[in-house]
Image (cartoon, rainbow, N blue to C red):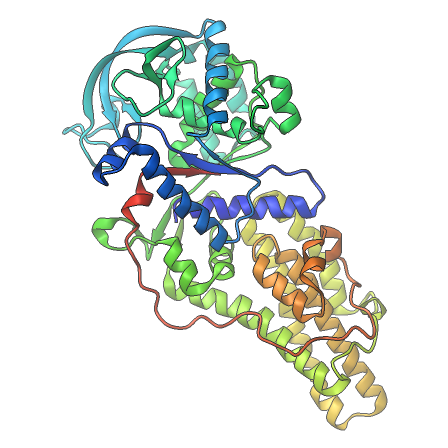
Length: 515
């Protein structure tokens, strides 16, 4: 789930912003160069590009299964990306920020970076991968990061640049301790982009990969001029990255952009790590949570909802199969799905399946309408803050109130024994509940697009009408008198059975995805 979790979050943000009518460029992709990739390919008996093609196909299928609607999938082996990297490198060179020097240190192949003595244990093991770092000495090209010390301190002091606050404090601590120049080339790594001024060396994988945020915006042959990038949408409003690669995104990347004469991203958000049943996931523990198997067992809506509803974005989170089933069943299958199905069956049995009145005719002070009107802005504000958990919780209070209203008014009793006036009031309750569920479908659509589409279809709308929705459609009053509903069908099945944790495929472990 390491790559799937932030990509789900990025997709939810993109969907919300599109609903708001904003121009969105959602870029994701794969980092495909470097020693780690070459070694993984060799282990499989494949050429590096062939290995990467295989892994990319797996990622793209997973994103399709999870209903990830990216605008651009950039591969660092794409010709337009390699051209962009060379352009940026040349600008930095012309700025006088690249020089050649000898370097000796301990290198972690998996992290793709040199480690300080204080970062390793007594046996020179990487603290992240628990494997020995390799002592290396070679002549490389270096980027003059230290030249940007003052600018980085100022940038990272801005509370809007790195979030959440705990990550900003961490980054600011690194910068204030003094940044050091870093190597941007490798003499011994053939699988990479050749340095234009010295083809015997290849571009360091992070200097290469970070530029994917730029190349992902560009059409083939567009060129990487500041003007072309600006018209394509740069600077980015948001980078979503794991907290373990925060230094590259919040320190190295801004300085590289400053050197190249390009604006820095507006915000870098470091999300937390995932555990399973309170334990760190790993092959040795046999508890790797493979997203392909998870979505295959439970479907995309359940997976998307759990990770965005259960985990406060930016904090570490845990996956528990029992809690996963309980939350999805209670929130989606019961509070929303069962409410819709019950109400539609009552409508079909007592009103012929057609709405007796307009939803707009429900009084403004009706408790369900008042709650829906109150909660829609709160949900929007939560999405803007990346508080997906709060957005889901606020939206679900509406369906929760709808369930209460059905129990309080018991419309089935009025239809059986009540006067004509009682039956009319009972019918109005059904309209209010169905309109409330429609509003919930709009509000939850960034998180559960498939479920929201099924709700809309059950309410008699077409897929095209659903896809044309805007955030304004979350306002009360869309359902109209005479609108006919199809035969009621469940929109969310309850989750049953046990999910079997599977080890991650060897092919997928060696190429990093980014969003």
